[in-house]
Image (tube, rainbow, N blue to C red; front, side):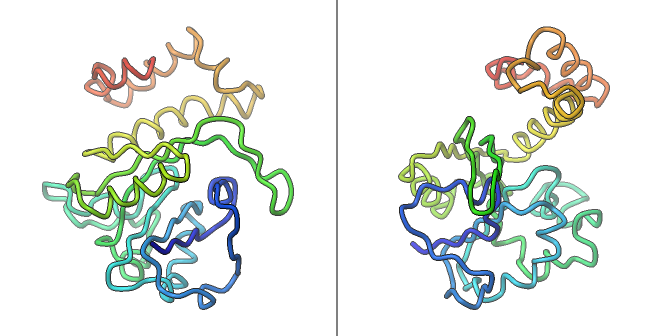
Length: 221
């Protein structure tokens, strides 16, 4: 299988291949089986049209950024099906240039930092939770999971990737401001006081069902 990591920052640069070919020109590469996109939402929007040389008829694109992704309403049941999220995909640039049918959703959990040009410091976690937008267990999603596991990552496949997207977004909403203000790390923030804040934020956001699910209790929240 042929891979391309589009954006070698703290997440995209956190790979475990012995040797990689790097370039700032997508035309340097042929069409890929999988394109991994760990760019920030605004960077992904700006770069969408540059993906073209990498995309073949069967290419899948893994979107590994925080927040509500541009493809969020693709194959979601109900009246919002296929609605474009204009706040992150103005004029449907990613929808038209990449195509939601290519997407495999992803929640990236590694804690990493670019400490110098080309140098990524990995602190904790190695999980990339992935899933198809419609929850179907496809061959491509399992092939990607197997490849990531073969590279010594954790890559569980979920049948509702939006659940995991919201779980991380919820945690970021609570933890990131406190971390920015105090410099506290994640473990120290997940003590009783912060746990209470997380639960309160969930209740005020109307996430009652999420609060009571066994998966959330298993996550220690």
